[in-house]
Amino acid sequence: MEAKQEAERLVKARDIYENRDRRARELKAEGQKVIGYLCAYVPVEMITALDMVPYRVLGAPREPITEAAAHLQTVLCPFVRSCFDQSLKGKYDFLDGFVSVHSCDTVYSAVQFWTYYVKTPYDHFIDMPHTTHKASIEFFKNELDLFWKTLEEFAGKEISPQSLKDAIAAHNEQRALVRELYDLRKADPPLISGTETLQILIGLMSIPVTEGNALLRESIKEVKSRQDGPKKQPFRLLVWGSPLDDVTLIEMIEGCGANVVIDDICTGTRFYWPNVEVSSDLVGALAQRYLDEVRCPRTFRETGPNYWADLENRFAYVKDFAKDWNVNGVILQSMKYCDTHGYEVPGLKDYLRRIGLPAFYLEHEYTMVALAPLRTRVEAFLETMA
Image 1 (cartoon, rainbow, N blue to C red):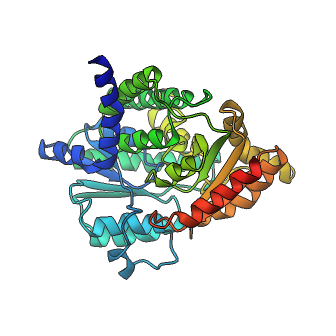
Image 2: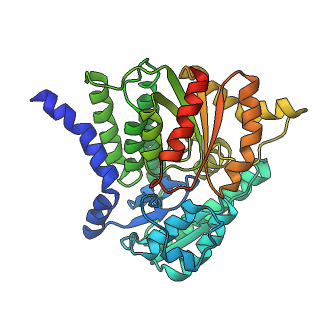
Image 3: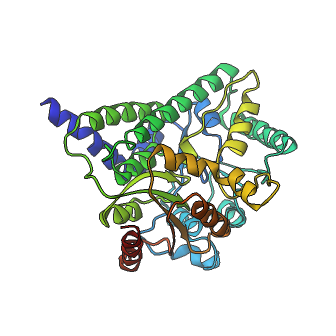
């Protein structure tokens, strides 16, 4: 009986992943407000502090983009176009609010159409700098102060310092639990697959943080005790790049005979990794964490005295991931027209070559309908590593 109950925990995580909007709609029906956010740079702690549910807006790689085609050019990021397309089709009709940031120019363009065509009782755009200078962090802090005030006005109550501190603690606990989940992939073979991990993480973005933390604790307990984990493979991969809001690509890579043991994507480590370092200035701590600690190519990092020092400053954390998870190959995946990631690839490939890690660039169309050509390319890369 205990074994059966244990087995049901990862099944529950998969069910949440496959029915992301169900819990949000239930909470909405119970009178709780649900606030959608489009990017990993939105400080979800502020939403939680007002007893509202932060809900990550994602696209639908298994569906064609139809409604958004009348508004956004086809040469723009297909992830953002798909998110907008889903909103036009009523996928997010339960949202009470929508929050976005200037993460990239495509997001900025899409948001102008979004707020005009998709009406929510509350919407807010956070202007976010692209550098991490002291003045940039101070500017971003002022933007978060404004975000705080508009949220309070919409909720009809104030965010007390204690409620924000409690929300930060809850989200920091979630980040610690996610890091513990990732640590289970350091084993050889890993105790949990990359596919299962991404299912859990995407599901977490659609439920209240306290429910997510309970799910993580249960999932970690199950993974540690189960006997039928992933098989040992000769290739331990790091997957870097554009947002992945569907497990199909990771599932395909693992199906080619590899263990995906770590990632650097905004629905994975980038979103969950760094804690908020609590101080007397809570908003300042949030500004520091989100602008400086989230390692997305959209943010410019200080250059070094030469090219290689510059790359070390930008990508040393990738080397640390590779070392800690015993990685022997890297897949740099980027969806077509994702300029921020595409421009980062040449430098990152040079860096990985210099530190002796085989790397392979996989550009894809975002849609997960036609995987056969991608599978062939991944298999060819793995053959070169054999």
